[in-house]
Length: 435
Image 1 (cartoon, rainbow, N blue to C red):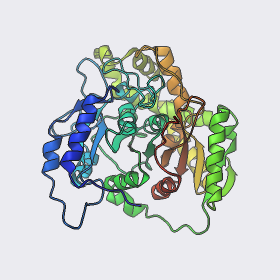
Image 2: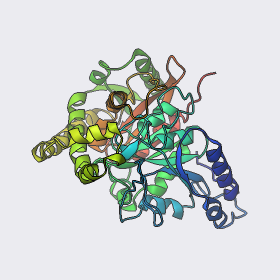
Image 3: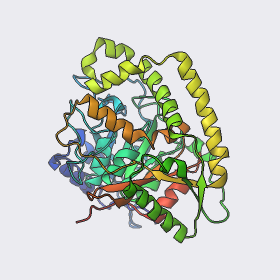
Image 4: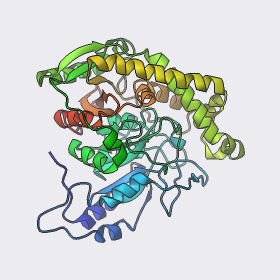
C-alpha cells in the first residue's frame, strides 16, 4: 500500500490551516500564513496523477527545529529562543519532497517532561478526551495528527517523547534507529540520545515520510537484509511481570496472537533489567541536559517552569565519572541485547505505557509533583530503547477501561527500521475511540 498525495495541495494546506485555527487543543505555538503560497508554488500535478507522498501534504513540527528565518521556542517561557546556528536538514528534505509546513507545535518546556503540561503556552489537550493525559514531550505533534489537522507531524524522541503521546492519542509514533535521519538543526536535550521521530495515522504515509527523511548514507550502510523464514517475535517476560496493568497485558497478548496467527513465531527473551537501563539513560540525560542549560538556568530561571528547574538542579549533581561509566554501561547493554534477545527474535513486543491513560484535568500546568511522577511512569518502557538507539514504533492496539487507546511497542535491531514499519502495515494504523 502506498500513501496518496492531494491533487490540490493549496486546498489541502488551506484546510489544515483552517482546522488549526479552529482547534482548542493548544497544539500549535505558531502558524505559518505563507504555507498556502508555498503550496501554490509547487509544480502542477501531471495528467498521470498525484505524485507520491509526502508531496503536497501539509504537516507541522514540534517547535524545536531551526529554520533560516526562525529560532524555536522549545516550549520555553518569557521570550526564550534556542540560538542554534545550523538549520534543520529534516525540514529541508521534506520541503524538497514537496511537503508543506503549516506551523510549529506545542510541547513540554525544553523537552524535559512527558505530560503535555506547559505553563507558558498552555497544556496540550488530548483530542480523544481532554480529561486524560496527552503525553509528551511531542504533545502537539500527536494531538494535531490525532485530531486530523495534519496527516503527519515531526517530533523528537529522547526517551519516548514521540511514542508516549502517539500511544495516548491512538496514532502511530516512530523513533528510527540512532543516526537514521541526523539533523544538527534541532534544539537538543540529550544529544547522544535525541532522535527525530514521526507521527502519523496511516502506516503507508509513515513509511513514505521516513523514506524522504532518512539520510542516504545511513540507507546505504543499513540495507535491509533478506530475512528467511517466519518473523520471530520476542516477548521480554521479566519486564512484563512488574508494572504492567492487566488491561495492557491483555492487549499485548492479543497483538501477539494476531502476529502468530499470521505465521510469526513467539519466543521469550531476556533483556537487561528495566531499572538498570533507566538508570543508565537517566544519568546520560541528566549530565548532557545540565551541560546545555546550566548557564541559562542560572541567568534566566524564568525561562524554565518549576518542574524543569527541579530536574535540572538534580541533573547538575551528576558528575563526569558517573557519566563516563554510564556511556560504558550503555555499550555493554547494547551488546547484550543484540547478541542475546536479537539472536532469538527479529523484533520485540512490549508496552509503551504500563497502565491506562491517567487523568490530568485539574492539575496545575506547573505542578512539580504530578509532572515528575507522571513523566517517570511514562518513560519506563520507552527510555531503554532510546538509550540503545533501536528503532521503536508505538502502535495503537486496543483500549483501556475508560475507552482510551492502549499502544504497544514494536522494536527492532539497529537498522531494522523498514522491518518495524512493515509490521505497522500489517497491524494497522490509528485507533478510534469506542462510542
